[in-house]
Length: 266
Image (tube, rainbow, N blue to C red; front, side, top):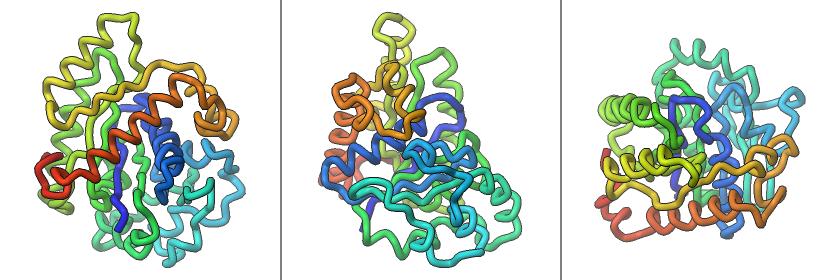
């Protein structure tokens, strides 16, 4: 059964969607079978693969609100070994419609349950908020991966997210664990980036991932071409970093320590 990873941070602009697209692509490059679920109404993980959001006939919204019951009908084969459950602006309405559904926090978990045996990894792109869409993603996930931007207010938002994760564990997903925390948009020229990295590493200790994602123009440019960083510039620092992140993450999640529950406690 595939490991479901929610990539979450309620703070926008931390490289969350960039991580989802390129981590999923890096895992597929490692011969893993991957499903990427776009749970962000902006649909950037969808357009990042060159898919026209306005032309979609079925999205994750239709699944969440019960218009379609078979998640397989909405799947798009985005790349070799990589499938996508797409999203567009319609997903905004799901936040309201989920309020009256029961159990409202478990809708995504129920929907993807029949798909889990098809994949080694399921990556879920959460919106930059802590509403019902994010709670659904965290309830469906086995673990949460947290990108942290190397900037002054990073730790403040991180503490709020950790509180939310604790509440989700208590209310709807007692098995949720921490896949890891890692630094994005790291600038080697600034002392601030190094300070933030050191503070996050000290706080999370065993759950801090050593791979750092640098500030990289090629990473920023790739989505506008509907391409992953490996398609756009496979020799860039961004591509190298996401390959390293995928290797570090899979080594952690497939280790005996993780399987035995010794890592990732929230």
